[in-house]
Image (cartoon, rainbow, N blue to C red; front, side, top):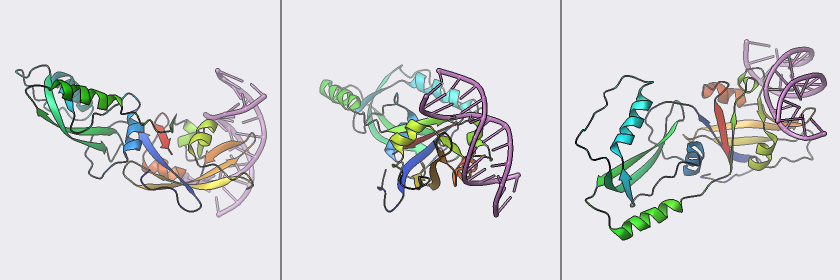
Length: 223
DNA sequence: AGCCATGCACCG
DNA sequence: CGGTGCATGGCT
């Protein structure tokens, strides 16, 4: 989180994962970005050396373009299969419409790698493992319906959400969450029912409609 | 109709 | 047997 919890309520970050394409300017919470990208994504640091595979990249671009417009994909037949590059800049992005996360990198081709530089870059990449605590849930029909709230998996609530004051009857608190674009969402977190369960009620439907979520989409919280 | 609460029942 | 999806009911 950029700023820690203050006052009575706790804070968490919320994000949604779907599909799309777009551009974004503001700076992004790196931990939330990483949680959305998943554990298999490991970004190299600026200043390190990378190997760029043009064909793999253009295939990926082609695949992601197909659902949008039939855009022209430039083809450079004389490009080598791999390019040694210096990585100048890495910026994190999230599509403003869909919250799909992606990264933008500035690469400069270099003629050769220094052996030490390559080793340093490799070590730096392997040490990139912050792995923040988070939970992710695929939304059910009742999670997204206008009739009810969000049913929070018990373990998820206990691990990620600020602890409830169980002397209250029923135990409840206000959660303040911030999404990838630093928009603030507040949810009422309550523990009730028979059997007892964690629920998000007030504020949840605004989130569902605001993010245009449907059953099968997923929502992700980090602490 | 939207929103919050409760209880049942299914499923691991 | 615990956890949670869903149906249902009440209130605004």
